[in-house]
Image (cartoon, rainbow, N blue to C red; front, side, top):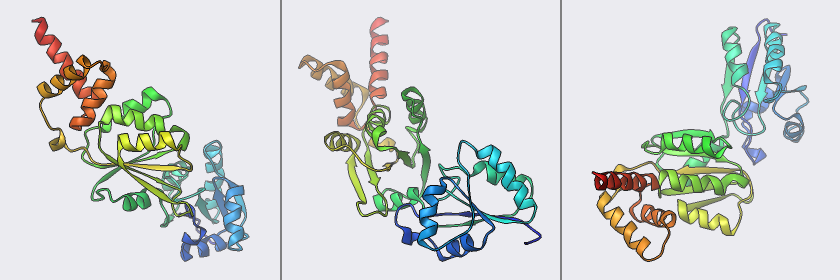
Length: 282
């Protein structure tokens, strides 16, 4: 046993088992133990490569309790590896608590790079990659989700979001209303046989998935906010809104149409309406 413990943070495949690195394989074979998010899931990977290293569970429900145990083993001189079900531990997966505790206890750590869904999807999508903001999973509650979206609505970065397939439609609806129309992409089943990247305007993706519900974990990418695309003046928005309402379109649908037409948010139109009403009241 080594006199100094060491924790390896190991990225594992997000779909295709062949994507694991030689360095990760060598490390997993030679450490004293592997802390895994789901031991049953990870056992399939380890069996595929003939790795017999002992496993222990490390997930969001036992993270703090297990951290103390792992830290003690590392202090005793053992070497361990941390893996998640897919991708890099600590990136929307358990790991941050253990990593921070190791750093606080001056236990060496090393990160072995490898597969990551966010970066893979970003490159596949063709979205601007010079600057981007990773949001991970949005809150499941509608109110909280919309609050997060409002905070990033006018940031000049490509936005990367993870989403479960059963929540994708409601998330796209909130994005269209809060952020307004913009280019987007949904990457599914990354590195797997049925890998697909759906591209288009948010409204087009929404219509597509309403017709054919998505399957598999999704990575959603949104083009950066561009103030220059906010064409037209409030007066033009309101005139179009008036025209649609006179044609029998209700206010909510009319606002959606105007937002799509001008590439703006419904909130922009709503605020313009408030300003107009205020002026009338003077």
